Image 1 (cartoon, rainbow, N blue to C red):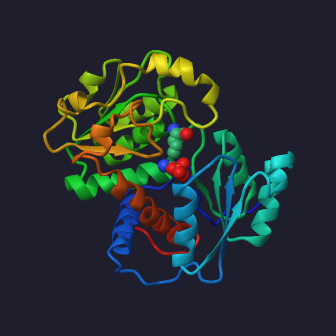
Image 2: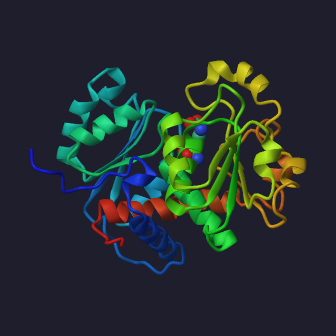
Image 3: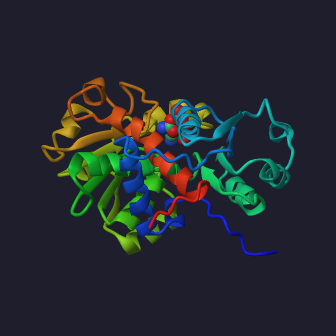
Length: 307
Ligand code: CP
Ligand code: NVA
C-alpha cells in the first residue's frame, strides 16, 4: 500500500510545534474575520458521534459550512456502526464518499483503527483517552488572555481523564508548566504523563491547593465523563475535596483565568461563583473551538498550508 498522503489529528503531537503554532495563527485570523477562503468548497465532512455533544457537533458543522463545505451528522442510530459493522469497513466506505471524518467515540484504538483504514484525514472529536481539539481551543484562549505560554503555570484539578491527558500533551508541546491534582485512583494516563514529564515541567499531586498555588490557569472537568455515569456516586465521594471554589482560586495568581471545557456541573467540580465569576473565560473558550477546528480542517482537509 502506498504511503498515505493525508494527515490525521488524533492527538496534539500528531502535528509539529510549528504546525500547531500555524493552526493557532490561522484560527486567530479566522476569529478576526480576516480569512475569507473556502478551502472546503465542494467537500464533505462526515461527523460520527457515538456519544452526545453540543459544542463539538455544532462547531464542526458550522465550521465546515463557513469553509464552504458540507457536514454530515452520523449518530449510532443512523449508521450501521451502531449495529456492529466493523470500524475498518466503515472507514473504507466513508472514505469513498467524503473528504474528511471527525469522530467522537469511546475507545481511542477505534479512532486509530478508523484512521488506519480511511484514506482521508481523520480528526478526533473526543475519545476516552484524549480531547485534542478542546485543548487546542484552551491553549488559544490561554494565549489570548495571558499573552502566551512561556513561564505560565496551569493547574488541572480533578479527574485524570481525556482532558487531563490532552493538557499533558499540550504542556509537552508548548512548554508551559502543568500541575495536576487528582485523587488516588484517578491518575491520568501513565505513558502520556511519563512522556510529558520528559519534555516539560509536569507534576502530579493529590492536594488541589498545591496545584493551584500561583497558577495562571485553573481548569477542571466533570467528575464522571461520558460512559462513566454509573460511577457517579463513587466519584462524587472521591472528588469531594476537588471543587474549584473561590477559596481555591484565591491561591492562584491574581490574574489567573478559569477554564472548563463544558458541560459543567455547578456545585460539583466548580462553584457557580467561579464559573460565572470575573475570572472565568469559558465562553471565549467554547467559541475558540469553532476557530481552531476550522483552522485544522482548512489545513488537513482543505490543503491550507500551516507552517
Ligand atoms: N467540550 C465539549 O467537547 O463539549 P460537547 O460535549 O458539548 O461537544
Ligand atoms: N471528560 C468529559 C469531557 C466532555 C467534553 C467527557 O469525556 O465526558
